Length: 624
Image (tube, rainbow, N blue to C red; front, side):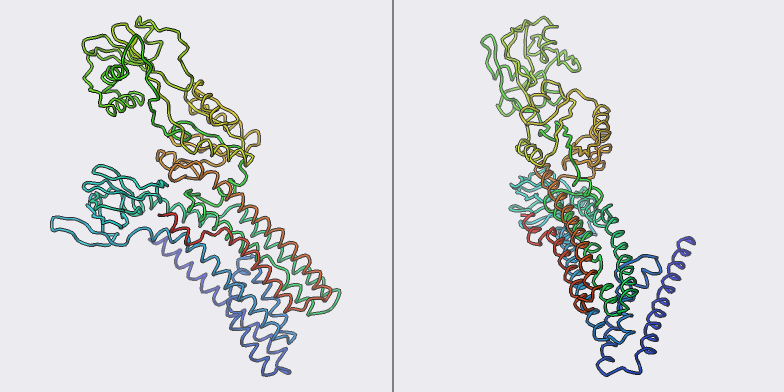
């Protein structure tokens, strides 16, 4: 506590010192102006002088703060220009310069405020009050008063305030803000729901499992806010360039005064040159890009990652859960020796009934969908990576790979039916082959289009997976990726990414699982699927909500557009400053016209950056 108190005292001391320094600074300006101008001051000049002192106070205040922190900014150069104009008696000119600068500051503040409001509107998607059921009945309470395991009632049309599980009721919920699904999701007892989503039809009672910042929506808001506060390297570059341009302006002004001895031309040089467009436009573009990406369904965790995204030339993709849905599905059932498909499924589902293997779950699910009766296996023996051997209906049964069946003495005909695209689960009883169930992980509907868009952006696409080489190659061929490697362990994925980076590639890694976390961390920018594991989402710099890969291409386009706008502002500022300084030095620009050019160019560059800002109406659209 004593350390914190000492820091507070030191902070207050520094603030008092800065305030006294500002007062002294303004007093010096008043003294200089009075000593120089009082013999010839007129009524209109006195009004202008008061306007300069009142209107210029924010400029002077910022200038002295920058001076104390040894930062060269446009406020400091503008203060020097205003002082010089006042000293030579150009009070009206100085007042007009002040007005132009303040108008620019106001418009800049309004534009940046719009960008921040667009992000803050995310907070409005959470209700402020909720109905909580207790032994005494329903009670309305503030969102902050809800506790874990409270049962919350949400009526039709209401927003869900917590992450939790439905305990009673039946409804459809629009959860596009979290999952990106275009169609409402059906909710019954036992299904999960998320804060910020909209209950559309029936009444739901929900047991709260996560509240406030711990909800999925809360983490989204926190990530966006953290990103807004971050500073990209290009923003630091913009700040340095702004300082250099101020030095350039002051140097040119000194040279102009030395050569021409013309105070008005010197003041014009100081006024016309500046980097306000860069200094304000760069963070505004970054803010707008992060906000727009959030509305498109991608959370970028900082300006640094936004800048890296703009330079990505290689995208590495995981397969299962990233390019595919991660849920194996049965494509068909091939039968042998006169067997029936439902009989094959009954034997296989009975044998696999208690297995946790994803392929076994797919078989049991399909048998249930077909209303196939399932018994219970006996003498169950599991062979890792191969299958199971057991007794089904008092018959020795083998379910698994071809090699397992051959090992158990089952004869398998070589009919050329094997396919690299599928995992085959062979089914045999009493050493008689009954059938082959062909299962594959289904590609995401947008996966092919997403890869095509990446390639249209000039990106190299690489598929790295732990799946069998045959399946990996078939998937790669269907997707059209440039390179594929299968049967990779997590450390081998990391090694490949490090190799790509050593070759000078800027790599984005897209994954969803715990095994992808090391690769996500080692890539230039890691991108996690929203439904992926917590480890993957925490390891990644970008999170795709709703698992839509097309959002990845949208984010890459936004990042590239952001960089293009910033570079255009850089080039435009340098051009305006160069031409403006030359014209001012030659006496072709008076201070007022120089101020108009300065302010107009600044607003032009700010508006150029503002093109990236998300519109408020889009926020609403994104939630419907």
